[in-house]
Image (cartoon, rainbow, N blue to C red; front, side):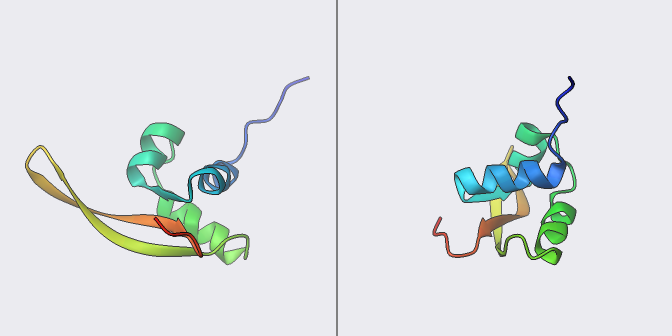
Length: 77
């Protein structure tokens, strides 16, 4: 019997339950999810989880990259 692969939303929820937060870099490189903001919106609209949207910056090869970290509400990171 074939096991079904978890949906992108399920993967995000599992990751956040384990780690407390997720950002674009984790989503794309670890989970293969390129539209993390859409998945977060989908999860929140269903009332399954609530997130704090934290704006951050990171220097990569001398360039300042702006991104958002989605932190599970009630978690400190």
